[in-house]
Image 1: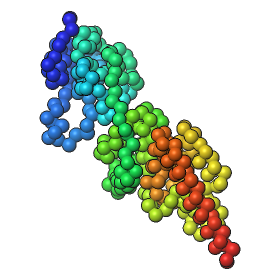
Image 2: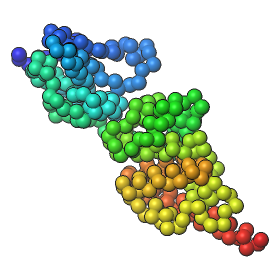
Image 3: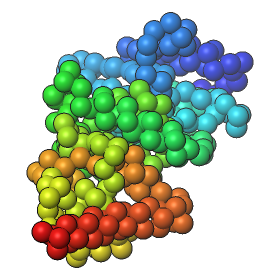
Image 4: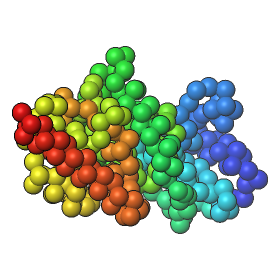
Length: 311
């Protein structure tokens, strides 16, 4: 089979579907017009194909279809998120016009037994964009996420998934991607893990997660008891938290969220989200937030000591 040329991605999609049928695959495809008419999460793969052999064994693959030109061949953040999820369970591809012979080989002979990675026969072109919204937007988005997760009608199974989620794992649960899609959060691999940590923490602390009037440092000192004389979260823990970076910081934060859950101590999740997100892109801003946390912690200690001495 020789290479093919196509006038549009729509024509390319139709030809791939016809080729799949020739090789006895059953295609599932959502046309673009349906996305415009229905409430569907953006980024679902163009094709999911099912094949049943004579022994009854089922093989499935997922594929995103792209053009060859640079402008229209990029894989969007939403598409990449879905492809990563599918890749954990079945061979998952990005097919472009120039891959026609390879596509025919896959549909004729079957896919490689590969999961966990997105297979791109051609050189991949992945869109990069500024993934951190402005500060005010972060606060608004986090407030909405807190409301979503804390809603009495939020599915208990989804809440359990988010609490069990390992933020640094590539295998995020569907409940995480649902929130990301509903809140319009596009991400790269780094920001994906940071947003996962934020959503994981909110889920751990639900239903008493957020209080916009309680700075993080004050919450760490009080730990559910406004009349406390000694800090709930020790100075040693605080110093470790504020000096940690990377995976160590994310581990300490996850532990801290659990402690706040036990203490039933909410805090300003807008401030916490900014602290988490800025670690990777703006060290000056991150340092400012660290200072804010330390300041509110030690101010709370000062007020507690002052009150105690007056009594």
